[in-house]
Amino acid sequence: MIADLEATGSLTPGLNWYRANVPPESWVDPPLKLPPVQSPTMGVWSTGDSALTEIQMTDSAENVAGPWRYERLDGPGHWMQLDAPDQLNALLLDFLPR
Image (cartoon, rainbow, N blue to C red):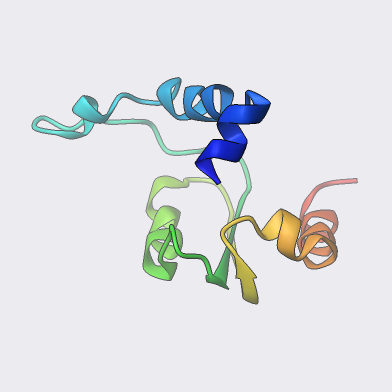
């Protein structure tokens, strides 16, 4: 899989997304304090996610001051937008203001 990403030139941009986020050293003593999210937030987790645990997702509510909604999908993996686009889009359409 990594070879495929390298061959198409997709690996570097994918890694750069993570590099542009908060640097890992900011999470150590003393940890970086980020303000809570003020806007309505929906966390979606799937039972097939091998990169994120359900408790990590549900604990995200601690970082949200605005309305929090949690949805759990049974089956799809970490890339649920590819594995279950209809389910995810239905959740988004219900959540997003019109």
